[in-house]
Image (cartoon, rainbow, N blue to C red; front, side):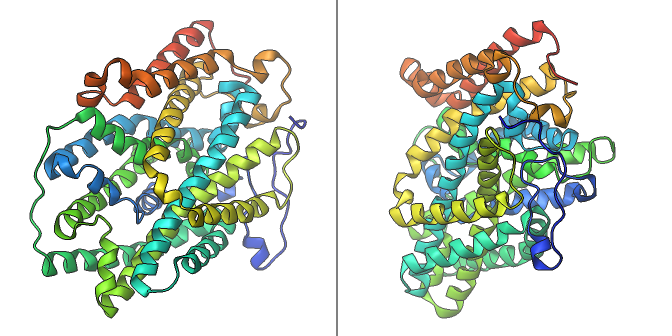
Length: 452
């Protein structure tokens, strides 16, 4: 890794270029750490309100609406503490999670996860862009590839201006999004024969909760500190509980509301994508197009933005952060994500979600144990940029091995105890808990290893 990192952002030119975010992976300056719990809730509410979120209603359709609601509530309870702890992590040390992971997994381990998550987030960017492009193509009868590029360019421009302007965008367009989808829901119930979907198969809690947590809260959790590093520092005790709850509440309220929309749309029209109703009438089409465009831009900003930061973490393993590294990385990843949409990533959605849960949940749970009980929240920002001095700094084998055990359980546990993990327990969560327990048993007795 390039030597000790300069921990201040360089001055930027005035005007519009001065608004382009270049902080990258460096600690966020205190003057930029102003986000309140309410603003954070709106960020995550809108980030989770994707045009693809109603797909949950289709994936769980055969379980019925009541059990879907219960599965979403249970998923929120499972993800509440991890999301809250990552929210506090960003307020305690204003760094993105993959920088903090250098102490959890070692510098090489953090590098490898940074590369992996760069492509995972870029994949989500492509997935959502594909849904938006196909939906807008059906509504407007214009070529889908044209919409892919229009949406891709708009999203890249938005992310270039960073979290300050993203928060403004989320806040001031949230009402428009809610109105658009509210109007579409009215159209659904007024023009179609809609009734409450009931169960058609026995409830499989393990399968249902796995679907929800990997689609939503636990796939977002490690990104939470990337946002909360812009929030009021943890040294200010006001609103601690609100900051802890804000991300998970925002994420899961969107999942609940849009999951219901997707389930009722599936029952009434045979398609989970509520926005496609706009293809049947000009006025409704305009409303649907605006709603879909906003939903995709809201969510994909929170895919492209972390993807950019994760790539910068990987690059920083070998060289100092360049002044314009963040905007350049944003443009490159935005183009690549749009290409993925054109190449048909939407056709591989199920396998893609499985991979996310198998990897991200064990990674996340180990980081929580390390930050709270091993580092004990004492590591100063500068320590994460120091050149590794020992083999333990390059590789934290306890974390790597613990992660490996959790990953094996997540991938093959269903073959060993199919009934248990289908009917009762969410397999990726069990894998993550096993990883966390192995790591805790290995590291906590050794005492605090953080460099204060």
